[in-house]
Image: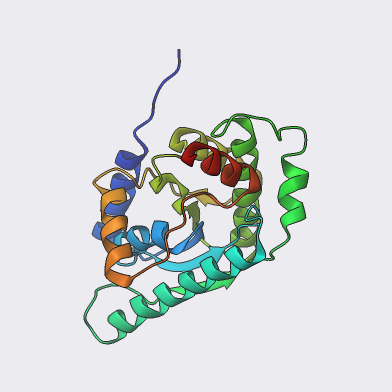
Amino acid sequence: MFTVINYQKELDMIIDGLAQSKNVPRLYLHSCCAPCSSYVLEYLREFFHITVFYYNPNISLEEEYQKRVAEQKRLIAEYNRLIDSGQARGYNIKTVEGDYVPQDFYDAVRGLEQCEEGKERCFKCYELRLRQTAINAAAEGFDYFTTTLTISPLKNAQKLNEIGERISAEYNIKWLPSDFKKKNGYKRSIELSAEYGLYRQNYCGCVYSRRTNVEDAQ
């Protein structure tokens, strides 16, 4: 029997434990874009020392990639300015930009080019990005790794957490469970995007998602 797990409740329990212990672990956070990370960083920066890992070889157009990564860095700089000035609570956020090699994405999803959006091809893409996140996090001695992807209503949070937990066991690095769209997380990300004037893309980044988006708009 398939059991749906409340990953937001699991995250709440972890954060409650951290707040009581006053322990501040290091989190290696994969980010898909600035808008999705906006709420996640606002939410977690009081409880973790966060390093944002911007790794998205699925983005097919280099111009689009550069625009998104620039927005990510701009948002983090703004958040750190607020923290440094005492206008926001939390710890400064670091950033690491991964290698941008679109061929890695095409290799990962080979044979699934005609797959329906949101299915197996997307799951392979999740795994590609989460695996590299785990590798880096384990190598650098982080306490946890996770991703901003669960904030999107279009992403399969159950599958993301399943993949994260499996990879966690492979690399002996703790997975931080999440379903960031809960507790009005997605709504808050839209509000923050407007507040900071963030560029909000209308597709995930890959050529297949872009093609679907264009077709749906016609």
